[in-house]
Length: 332
Ligand code: FAD
Image 1 (cartoon, rainbow, N blue to C red):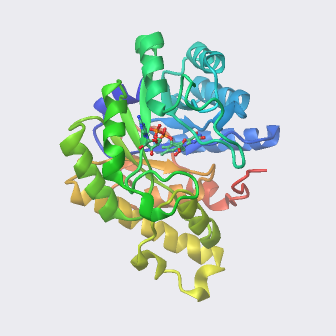
Image 2 (cartoon, rainbow, N blue to C red; image 1 turned 90 degrees about the vertical axis):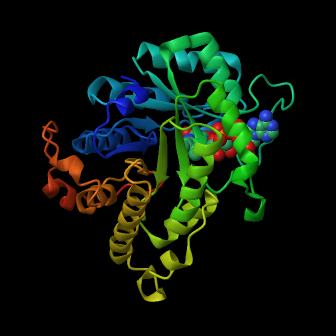
């Protein structure tokens, strides 16, 4: 099924989950077991990341294909187009199609640190919109295509935050939607007000009904939380930072507990302040399950997933509690 079809049939609240391909065989085995357990959350779809330039092409395709075949959940494969030629892109799309993957998240990507844009100016694929157009033109209805959006504005490289402006990006986001994008996943954020004002801006100016999934990253350690927010140019509101006094910053267990409360708060606020219109939440899982399991179990909105009658999978909290999050950001 496609993300769009699943979304159109959606009744209650739900989640979707992002994973990245581990580097080693054992990392992959661990992750697949974990993904299978997380299917108890009945995710609307799962996504597998793609490293810009195609350096993870094989591993991304492999993980996405196994997941599509074995997990009974629609897979969405990320695909970037920067520094990639048409052959690599076609190869990726054809392999995905052969593996029954029906969803692609079409991205521009960033050049690797220290690398320049190659062939900028005359490259066929300069922006994500070029990839959206290419897929729609050459692959028709084979793929349901998602695109990225930035509630606080997209930031290029090391540029400082004052250069971010969602209003400036809006025409380009509209271009992607007009080119046929079927759904949107946002960059992670912790500032609910900023997300809601962006969503309103988008609804009024671009599209009233295309599905938009707010991107959320659980907080697993104070250091990683700050690093991820910085890398993503996501502001951390003062009232959230204030919940981590110096005395708890190095206590990972306490940080995780507070993180779960913060994420639940974000979810409940978005659900309530949009009158339930936004009910599907996308998690940047970092290949970790425990925080997400706890967020879903304790969130008044998302815990409904676990109560659904047609959800015959059982969430085994024992496994979750025993599960020590051994995977780090780099996995292995
Ligand atoms: P675009 O939509 O092309 O936008 C890039 C910038 O160019 C924006 O500032 C936009 O406003 C501007 N722009 C667009 N069109 C024009 C135009 N015609 N003229 C002038 N300016 C224009 N990266 C990876 O490498 N792998 C991944 O798997 C990955 N997954 C991601 C998933 C999500 C949900 C998100 C939000 C990001 C992800 N990224 C990933 C990061 C992404 O590749 C970078 O943020 C990248 O810098 C922008 O990609 P984009 O697709 O949003 O680009």
